[in-house]
Length: 127
Image (tube, rainbow, N blue to C red; front, side, top):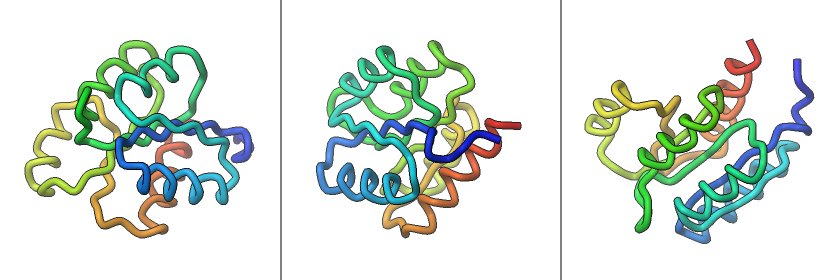
């Protein structure tokens, strides 16, 4: 099993407060964290670096989370992608079934929600 401290996570969110919170939480969990403030910036960072997981906002002005996920999965099909959203759960879950996104965390989220989603995705990816 991979050592947790080596896992690199990319956080993509246009809201600075959410980026900061997620970055602090994930860093405190022992992850190496990179942040991007837009879908395009996140995709560029992803293409230039290696990440074990991507945590992305669903709604961003330049590229939504669904589109970002498609681009990332084209490059790296095994990289888990978790979307964070405040959108209506039923609609998101419907779309999730036909997408390449691995999981969704709904706002407002707790520290435990983030920890659980990240560990579940990384553990599943290591099998």
